[in-house]
Length: 66
Image (cartoon, rainbow, N blue to C red; front, side, top):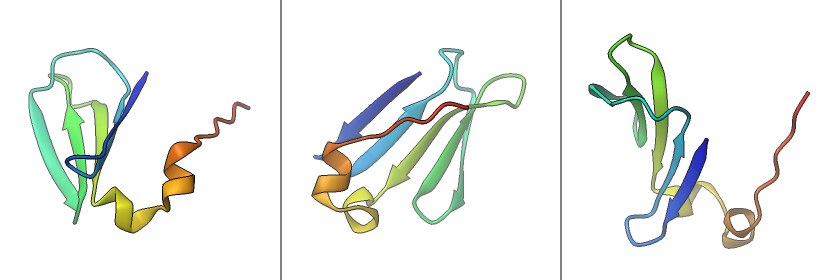
């Protein structure tokens, strides 16, 4: 998994899988899902991320595993 914060485009991207993206769909305003050839989600992009989180929240990410 890769996570990329692009401050220039104000976007946060989670890449779940390295399979080729064949389709993208904006499922909610500013939320885009990328799909592979089997219609599985391989990436999620959040636009306008500075409106969704503070700079402090964006500078520190926490991961939880069960």
